[in-house]
Amino acid sequence: MEHLESVPARRGLVIFLNGTSSSGKSSIAAQLVRILEEPYFHMPVDAFHAMRSRVPVAPDQLATVLHRTWQGFHRAVAGMAAAGNNVVVDHVLSAEWRLRDCLSVLVPEDVVLVGVHCPVEELERRERERGDRPPGLAARQLKQVHAHGLYDVECDTAVESARECALRIKEFLPARPRPTAFERLRAGYG
Image 1 (cartoon, rainbow, N blue to C red):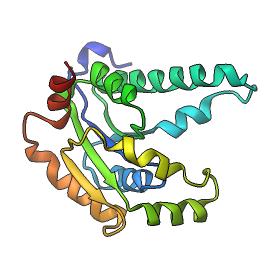
Image 2: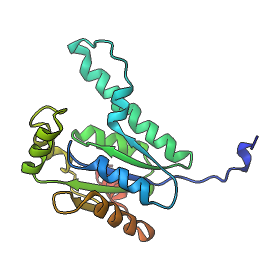
Image 3: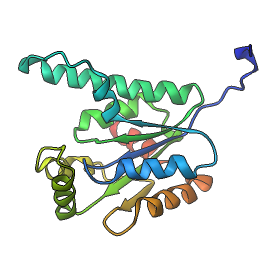
């Protein structure tokens, strides 16, 4: 059995896909894990919600349960990266506290923040087609999701395929400029 001392220490890279529901984040993430040359873990926030038991939650407790789930998700991503794992995060920063929390737990120079954009008409069409999201969810998220305004890379999934977006992100990685969007955002919220 290999001893942990033989594993070289490093921090993993976090490719953080932020966009509304139905904007194409999961499709881009699926392409990224196929084309990137190092191993990456796709960590979608929806997977964390799916892990929760189906025990009914009282309406007055739902906000607390959801808040704790998102906080735990942020810390799980940070823990994976701290252990040297590369991660593709699929998230919706539809509340300012989520961004602030991510800024506080992730190493900002190790985060590539990707804005995943899509026009509202296309989001609504995708929601209708999916049928598993409340109508208008993406439109309600749109204002806050991109309110912080800073990204390292941006994609529009109405004009680029998920593969094209993933290739653009991959091409960006080798020469990432500093400060990163996360570094600039952390300085602005400091």
